[in-house]
Image (cartoon, rainbow, N blue to C red; front, side):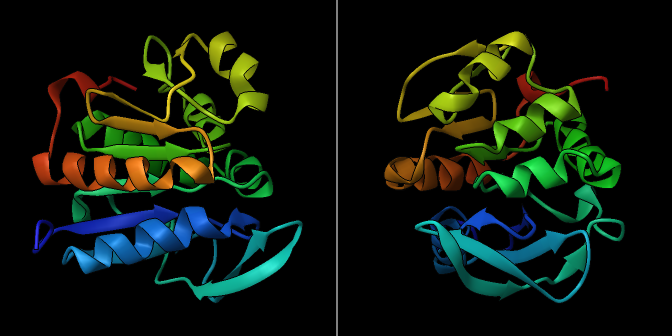
Length: 187
C-alpha cells in the first residue's frame, strides 16, 4: 500500500461532481490512506451527477477545525456549484493556502481551479481545467494547457471526469512523494 500512514483531505460542499470526489476517495483509501471529507459544516454533502442531485457523503471535519499540518495532501473535486460556493469561504481558501505554504501536494479537477484562483495560488503555475474556466485561469496568471493531467511541483490538475484515471494515478504519486519545494508560496 503506497499511502499507508498518509492522511488526505478532500475539501467539498454540496454540488461536487460525484465521480470527482468518490473515485479519488475510493482509490486513496484502497492505497491505505486515511481520507477526511472536509466541508463548511458537519452532516452530509450532496453530489451532482448527470444534471441531478446524486449520492451523499458524510463530512468528517469542518474546515474551521481542519489543520493542514494534519494532512499529507489535499484534493479539490469539481462540479460547478461546489467550488463556486467554497471560493467565497475564507476558511476554505486559507486551508488551501496553507497546503501551498507548506509545499504539500494539492490536486484540483474540472472547475476546482476556481478555488486556486480565489486562494491566490495559481499565478505562474502550469495547469489545466475544465474548458469553460480556461479564461479565468489565464487571467489569474497561470499557464493553461489542454492536457489530461498536469503536474507542476506538487500541484496536479485535470480537465474533467474523463481524466480521472490519470488524475488519480498522479494524486497518489504526488502524495507518496510528499513536499515539493517549488510548491511553496508566501501567501
